[in-house]
Amino acid sequence: MNRYSWWKYLIIAVALFIGVVYTLPNFFGEAPAVQLSSGKSTLKLSADTVPQVESTLKQAGLAPDFVEFDGRSVRARFNDTDAQLKARDALIKAFNPDANDPGYIVALNLVSRSPQWLRSLHAMPMYLGLDLRGGVHFLMQVDMKGALSQKVESLTGDIRALLRDKDVRHSGIRRDGLDITVRFRDDAARNAARPILQDSLTDLQWRDGTDPSGDVTLVAQLKQQSERTIQEQALKQNITTLHNRINELGVAEPVIQQQGVDRVVVQLPGVQDTAKAKDIIGRTATLEVRMVDDSSEAQAALAGGAVPFGDERYVERGGAPIIVKRQVILTGNNLTDAQSGFDENHEPAVHLTLDARGARIFRDVTRESIGKRMAIILFEKGKGEVVTAPVIRSEIGGGRVQISGRMTPEESADTALLLRAGSLAAPMEIIEERTVGPSLGADNIAQGFHSLVYGFAAIAVFMMLYYMLFGVFSTLALGVNLLLLVAVLSMLQATLTLPGIAAIALTLGMAIDSNVLINERVREELRNGSAPQSAIHAGYEHAWATILDSNVTTLIVGLSLLAFGSGPVRGFAVVHCLGILTSMFSAVFFSRGLVNLWYGRQKKLKSVAIGQVWKAQE
Image (cartoon, rainbow, N blue to C red):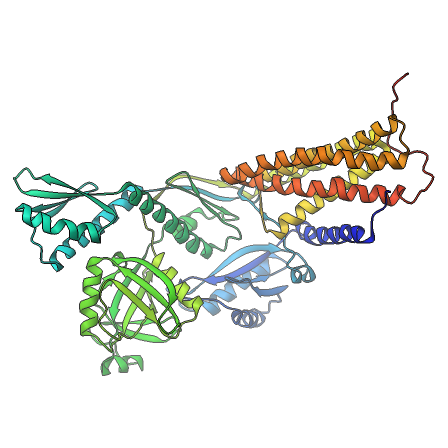
């Protein structure tokens, strides 16, 4: 009756093993480390960089615990801060020989002290949030009016170009805030322009009007849906750009998320240099399109000669030098979109969309420059690098440009991202700034840990005194619940914050309720005269429905917080929902496994240690 099959005990054993393995890294603490990351958007690190770092450290007489590539950067861990500082100086000297043009960022960081066998199992500790580790918090306001104004300015140029291309005469185009007014001398010209503008510029709605001078007009205004789309895209692009920039700081788990309609929260745990963070976040990046100089003088310059007058020397993504002309053909302001995809030969490509002015210029330049190369240059921190320099195969009109040739799908996606998110889509300003010191974070961790320990101890003492041996089983089940919850959070690489610790404490209180229901149900069966084995079986069976109902309703509330909350509320909800799931496993499945293991093989069981069973007097 009260016996588990071997496979159920196997499930429990596997769950405990996984729980222990993935919880362990959280107890090893952090060690000083040096992180090497790219300082330029066009410069990529790879696993091939690891041997270079190891060789540099060896020459400096340093022996790191390990050197690894984590996908974006290379990290080297050391035993003490003295070795960490020496390693930073050695790497800066080796990888940034030109101090005026640093290609790499060498930052001090902290990594887990977990042993290599745990790291090989991808067992990593939870990240600590801003309130537990310390760092910088920014609340940034996005200028949505600026985003709309930029779009209207671009559309104004599109209107002028369309009317010129269709040979429709007008008396002038002016902007009045977010309205665009096009003046005509007569109704015939206005009637000729109306279908052209309505068909080509679908983001605008048009209405007839009359100018004070007596001219007839067409007044354009952004549609409400278009306004919302422009604002949403501007916010998303700003968040993407912020992610790209903050990666340079070496922050393990930055928080960059939308708050409300036009605000962005940026939290950088572990960063104390506010000035450096503000410099990188507020950095500007611009794009320019220029022609490549393939003349004999330029070829001589590539071989080490003087750069011809009117030219400049830059470096391509692969590191090869290239000579381009100073004359700027297009800028990033003419680029409206960039997406990665494939060309007609199913090769990776980047598809660009230009505004009307850019399309006209690009068409004219490509018609006159077939067979020549065109360079797309990204400028950051005053330094320019050539993202790509394709050969012009034919005249390109219509505002849609395709860049292809010798690219992998990853490179095409990276190029599209650089072109699309090289600069902020809308201006932003910091309206709130605060710094959380590491000592305050350490105090928060200690207080949160003590609250959990004292709460757990109080529950354990009460359960063991009131329910005797069943109280011991309940306490062990509660410990397993905590173990599994921490393990799952570590596996998900979740960020633990103070609300998360509060959710763990709440989970402990809610999880023990399930064991209280089971224990009281077993007592009730014993009071009704059931045999001990039957009482245990009926207690678990009858309590299960109540436990399931209560946990499902609580889970619904947790999912609502997760779906509609933001920031600390979402952090609380994640831990809360995971805690409910782990508690159902530990309180019912695991605790019954213990009870079955202890009592299940006793055929003539006369009593169970579940505390005082009060029977009603007849």
